[in-house]
Amino acid sequence: MFHRVFIANRGEVAARIVRACRELGVEPVCGASAADLEAGFPYLEEAAATVRLGPGPAADSYLRMETVIQAAKQTGCSAVHPGWGFLAENPVFAALCRQHGLVFIGPDPAVMDRMGRKVPARRAARAAGLPVVPGSEGILRDADEAVRAAEEVGYPVALKADAGGGGRGIRRCRDAAEVRAAFVEAAREAAAAFGDPALYLEKYLVGGRHVEFQVFGDGRGAAVHLGERECSIQRRHQKLLEEAPSPALDPERRARFGRLCAEAAARWRYAGAGTMEFLLDPDGELWFLEMNTRLQVEHPVTEQITGCDLAQAQIRVAAGQPLPWRQEEIRFDGHAIEARLNAEDPDADFRPQPGRVERFRIGGPGVRVDTHLADGCRIPPHYDSLLAKVIGHGPNRAAAIAALDGALAAAEIVGVPTTAPLHRRILAHPDFRAGAYDTAWLGKLLESEPATP
Image 1: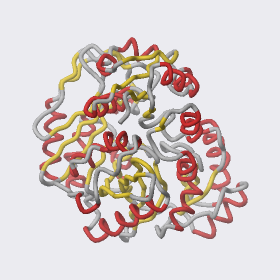
Image 2: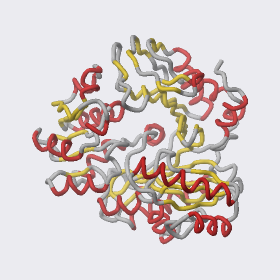
Image 3: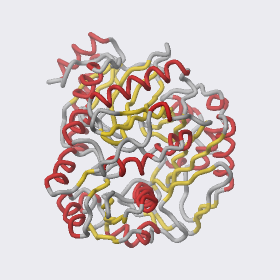
């Protein structure tokens, strides 16, 4: 096992990894920007050491690869955990860690590069027997080729960035004119966000649901799956609420696609936690979209229904230990629902609201709270606005909803507005209670009834 692990991230994910390290007897070392050092986050006090990476903006701190590696080496760390976001899916960073004698807690850089790009990932998934959404065979050279591909698969279609993520570089198109206009916009956005303007095209499946399977591999040809998560409550391609298991998936498809995903991960010699994302169409068919080669923000719902600690398992496998579980040992217990609690104002187009959190109290029976906050912490303006993830768990879906709603109703968060009222509105809606929603559902709700109660 490692003696020290450098955490190349911030906020809630850094707090989560600090906890996993401490539980394994590993000393966590945190990198932090000047803004985060001034914010008063408790996890920085819990770390064995903290290194200032640079000023507040991520480009000057958390995204500086050489600085991160130097900080890890100088503090005696033998491994680097990237969390999610920032450098977590950057194969260049993973390779640099290896070149400097540091273990990157994640998949091999070559595997990460292949699966992190959408077109190679689609090819790999197809070769592994996973059904792939119909679309272009490769990168589109220009708008004319995009129009030809769209006419082959049929409208509507979606233009997507090959190096994309987080909902950026995506355009839905209903005809050739929209494809031509969107091609320029999407390429420009992809270049600005990812440094790569390359686009591909997929059939846009109307009424689809976002379902993802959690896989975990040892990098040597063994892998398991830990069931699926439903992530269809989205606003502008950004997830707000996730649950496991999916209310739209039956046991037969759950078992079949879980097995296919685990077999694919084993075939690719995938190491650590990974997520295969699918679109569930209105006919009940699952179509592979992409793979996220890291731990997901929403991993706690999987942990709650399986009892498996994914963050600890990442560290164990990276240290050379075998997979902590065999497939037949993984059991699913009850239901879990996670709300991403953000410092945003839903009545002002979800504008982020940085500031000082005077009081932070949330929890309750059947509730897990993952957060980096305490009373008096400041929310810097440079990063995402996530305050906490609140997870309700119970023997069934109704109990999980009740636990989560109870925690949100009793929460005391003073100093910044939050999305708690919106989450309660979602949880109370008859469509959500019935599990009858898709990726477009929340957008339609907010258009028809924009004001929160």
